[in-house]
Length: 340
Ligand code: NDP
Ligand code: MG
Ligand code: MG
Image (cartoon, rainbow, N blue to C red; front, side, top):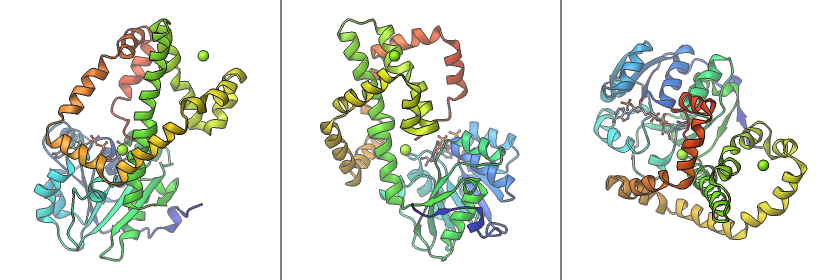
């Protein structure tokens, strides 16, 4: 297995005399800044006026414009939405960047696909906790942490690895473990995972199952429970103990059906298609399409989103969830948390 870094592998004083500007105070931003502060690091926040600004001030941080924050910091962690990063970088960060500063990211997309091209005289690295911000914060408060990936893209000071590890320690991640990756690997596997499995694969699988049942005349309400609602139980079991733990908990009939029918549904053709999806990611085709879509103000994204929201599984699901207030409450509490 690849080398895993822990607290003992870090120069504890590396961030002691440095100032970190966390740009953005959303899911990741609030967690990184609060954890770093509690670890004794000098943190300022860079934002535009708005909800996050007020929240960061309420939480006791000194908040500046992105430009002012970037200007005064040694380390600049960019935790804006990925689509916003190139514009904000170009207008507010690039003009004030100084030699020897470090630019950090929590996702490699913009660097890997050339949407941000940093100057040659700054360090560029990635520290990406493998979990949503609320979990990064909660585990830290409990004395634990969420594991993180780190990667070095540019190392002009020769200290990029020391910084990556010190930052990962500051947010609590090295209590769980840090794994080294590259911008390329982090970006391509992240995109593939969300497209083929976690989001795209899963929503298409759920809809195909639901449609197969309803087209065969079964009630949509019953199909909803079988193909969507019960997923949570299965996913929780897999999260806690892998496929084995899930299979241990289901009936033997369900397990036998899993063995004989699963590979018929997700068959070699599906895997061949996954390979094409991966190739589009590796070739930059996916990135190009998404960047252009954003430049065009998202016409296709909006059209598909509207259509998807009116799918029968959504209409029937909204009604059924009204019968299950316990589900809705959970949904509200977790609204901001999930990004993959
Ligand atoms: P969020 O959408 O939760 O937060 C974005 C923040 O950026 C908000 O505080 C928002 O403030 C601010 N912002 C948006 N536009 C601007 C602007 N033009 N100028 C200044 N501030 C702005 O982002 P995430 O935390 O989800 O993502 C941040 C990064 O972390 C991304 O690179 C993402 O890929 C990565 N990541 C996210 C994970 C997650 O679970 N969420 C997991 C691992 C990595 P405002 O209130 O003003 O809109
Ligand atoms: Mg059943
Ligand atoms: Mg992603």
